[in-house]
Structure formats: C-alpha cells, structure tokens
Length: 198
Image (cartoon, rainbow, N blue to C red; front, side, top):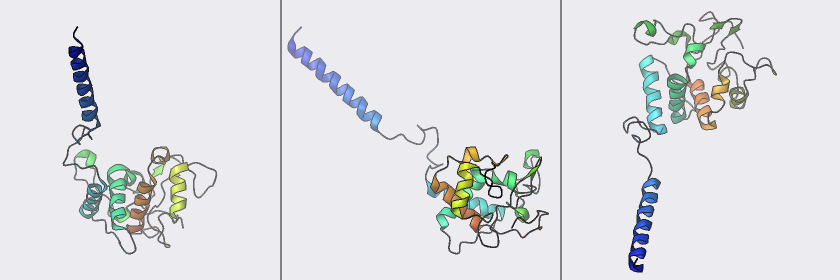
C-alpha cells in the first residue's frame, strides 16, 4: 500500500476522532438533559417560582433584613420540592386537592406544626418570638438537617422527619430554606391548637 495513502487515512482518522472529542465537549442543552429550555435550571427561575407560589397562596413575607433571593429560593425548596407543608401544617390544605379541589394551603396554620404521626407531633417551624424558625439558629437548624438529632432531646434522632433525604442538600439551599422560614408569618401559640414549644 502506498505510504501517502496510509498517511492520508491516518490523518483522516485523527480529524474524525478530534471532531468527536470537540462535539462531546460541548455543553448539553436543557433538552439533551431531559428538560425544556423554558423551565430553566438556574436559581433565578426557581426564585421567581418561589415568589409566585407564596403570592398565589397568600403567604405574606417579611423581607426586612433578609436576602430576597434566598427567601425566594427557600420558598421554592420548601413549597415545590420539600413538601414541608404536608407534615408541618395541620391540616395542610383548606380543601382536599387529592379529591380535585383547587390547591389552597392552610395559611392560618402554615408550618405551625401539630400533625400527629403516632406518638410524634410535627414541630412549629415558623419564626418564634426571637425571629428564629423553631427557635433555632442557622447552625442548629443545619445540624438538625444534617444529623437528624432532636434539638429538644440531644442524642435522640427524629423519627418521622425525612432528614436522611434533606441532609445531602447544599449549604446554600439549607441557608435559603432557613431564610425563607425567617420571613414567613409567625403563628402564635395555640392559634391552630398547637401546644406552645417555646
């Protein structure tokens, strides 16, 4: 075989391989990742969804001394991803969306706890008198989310709270959840029949 043909075939193979490497190195589009461009994958779109949800549900947010973007992202994580309302609001909805009713959360008791799971009762995670959600600092909140340790009973693990799922959240996302919980209305003790925890 002619040496020029061998060199030509080798060069063509090199160009094809190089082309494949370059094509593979290109970032995937949202559709290639299984999503749609209009959904967005950035914090800004999730922040807007979080604000829209709070507005539609009638949740009044206090932005004083708060990071607005974190509050919006926290609303998205708490309401669209975390399902916190299902366990921390008694009852979670004013009518049953599972029976076809429009979804309207129980704003009067939003995240004030009081849902019974056998011997366990969900905690009030609204801002307490000190403005801290469930009376916890961010460090304490993060510790609970990472370890599942009951803040009222050190050394004991929370038995119903799905902390094993939430413990892998990024610190940024946990900070957003905490910031959102500082911005929601505080529910005064016994307003929803929930015993005072503070």
